Amino acid sequence: MMRDGYVARWRGREYQASPDGDDVRLYQPEPGEGFEEIRPGRYVRVLPASEVEELAYVRTTCTWQGQPFIVLAEHDGWLRVEYTGGRWPVAQAMGLEVFDFGVYQGWAPAGAVADLREQRL
Image 1 (spheres, helix red, strand yellow):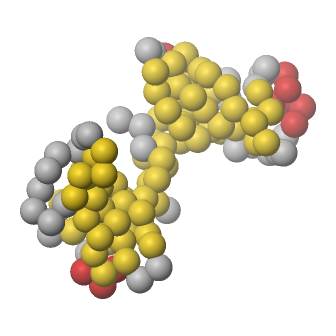
Image 2 (spheres, rainbow, N blue to C red):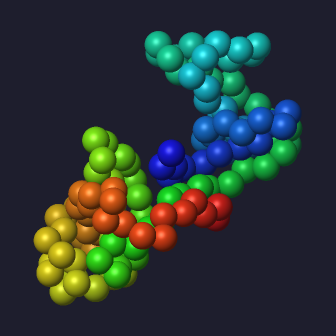
């Protein structure tokens, strides 16, 4: 599973999360006590941040063609990756798309990446 976003631990379970001032929004795909449906297959519960056991940012990283990347998504054996090396000539040589100023993204075959790992920030 490729993750890039906030997670929170509450009552011993980890949830997708979103900090919101003094509160934290917890998300899950199924109904649960205190969770409200916000769309089909998506439920939210808002808690005071003080009730959350842990809040962290999780991202998946890898190397592709010897260069460092963040993994943003996965689809049909391909990974949507964002270059973190900060060198335009390298990004250009790899054929990456300019997503924004200084941000370069592309699709990498999942089997061609190395050092795939999740990091908690």
